[in-house]
Image 1 (cartoon, rainbow, N blue to C red):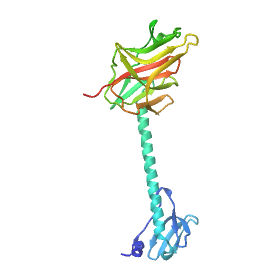
Image 2: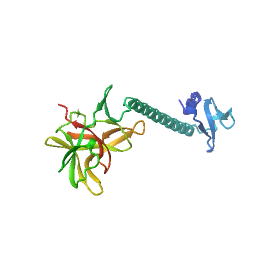
Image 3: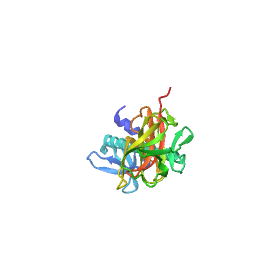
Length: 259
């Protein structure tokens, strides 16, 4: 079967997503058409410019160029449509995730259909003057030197086996947040090392922060957070803090390999 005979029986309609088509003539010019079709030795087309059906001899039409460009445009439209569909699905999934997280400030994680909460840990500031629970640490300790922010016990009771565990944090205020590597030492876990300036009351905080991804998923204060690299087995904490003020909230957890 010759190409000419094939074209005689081929009917092409391009109306998908309202896309117009360039119907090329062999002299290099073209008509903007809504659709066209080959009928024997003629090509019928609907002119966008004149809003009417017209005809042109088939011998004058560059069908190869017309088809090639139309096919490429159709392919682009399909790809764009697929991208938009995937983006819409991602947004729907994100909204669904957000709807499962309580609006109360805190740290949460999803386990199948269940939403679980991690209770905030009680933090203690340890200096050479003794230990003070952070929640009642007002005013700031007027001491010079160093200290540590600690959690009681060598191990967290919140254990995960997934080294890429995702968490959701509903912030109580617009503050910085992240995941800190916690160091076990005897009967405590050290969240960060502290340096106190007695005159200015400034505190230098030194925490071992993990590189994380952060994704805002709903309101200004709801985020998903997860490590960029799988976490090694050990002790960790999700923290919300204002740098230099010793204003920090801690939600501890541990990563343990699955047995």
